[in-house]
Image (cartoon, rainbow, N blue to C red; front, side, top):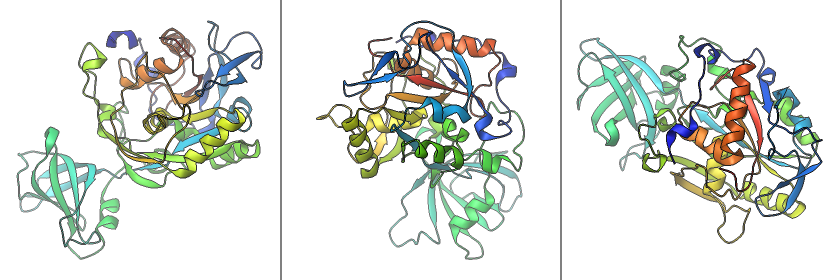
Length: 383
């Protein structure tokens, strides 16, 4: 499908440079119709119906706040979060010997060689830059951390070996030496608040280089409110990769080399979704990363169900894709001509989504990672 179908005009001043003062104070756009929320039915992924707000007719969206989610998500829904934790991936150090400045960006953890203790050594694929070319044997120092370049990896990445000069645990030294990387469209220096605000409150499994941004809006109190209304809140893992910032440079999405991201969907998630199907309740994904994980784990023998799964996914979702698992979606606003915007258009309909984006621009919503959010229902047969 042509990439220019997913384009829109965004005033640069609407790109959020800081988060909302409080997580749940972010605005929440809900495309809606004039009828009451229970007057139409949402078709669930397994073919059953659940009374819900329908997006099928064009209408002005309604404005809420993320704090309103407990009243907008039906009781007994299954709400799935992504518990990935953002790495302190950006390390600013100096070259051993010359003292020249160098920057290393951790991309993915690699397996150690036989006999190497994980407490003493770590191997990573990284991006790196310095005033002079980085070569095999170059050593970058930051506090007690030593980053030794061992060779080039695929796609312009390097393979490096991490150790410490004082024998301290390498994972502790890495976390101390690194910074949480902000997206390139946030044009300011990292501040003390970013270390916490660019992580979800439920972040647990380290491995992402960017945050699952829809989850940044949730607080523990908000999650407790959802649970008190009978919702099952469960977590999967998808480590957001460097490819999330990879621009689409082709004219047709079918020609785009989709990046790979590792994911885990547990038995707990599979069981919760099975219970939702039994009682006819929606599955609500908080973020496109959750959509990618759940749709990658779908059970081919049972519509609307997932299998416990782990591995790598390169799933590319664009209009025409038939969703199997996710019924509702909480998501931030995405970049023009991006694979994530294509996913959202596939989910809720291109016309409806772009109309909602236009309304968001008109109403001065804040966009991208630290911006506001939307709550969408899945539509069938809509491109």
